[in-house]
Figure (cartoon, rainbow, N blue to C red):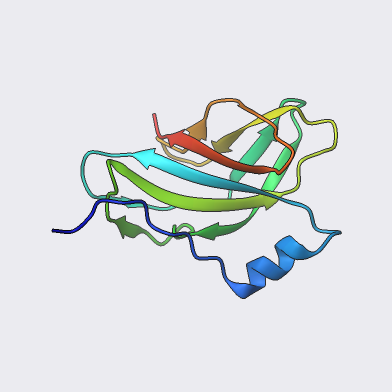
Length: 129
């Protein structure tokens, strides 16, 4: 019987090189999205981290999810699909942020406000209301 466990995130060497560059700080967000049935999903390039100050941080790379206009069908692991988004680094004075997918249709991904941590690596749940 197949075990229903979380899938490992694979990060390409190009993304690892960017993460490791001191001058290019990034914010890594491991996302989970609840769904009861297999789903086709994508993320738009107009998905942003919005800091508590209102500053916007751009999406740099998406892992385990396709970027619009392509879709990907997902296997479900314990009721969720998992993917990782890498954004520009947060401002020094940022204390919290949320994700908002600004798209010309309904049901863009959003998240609750997330407090900042020292590592700038997060695990959050996204919604598509």
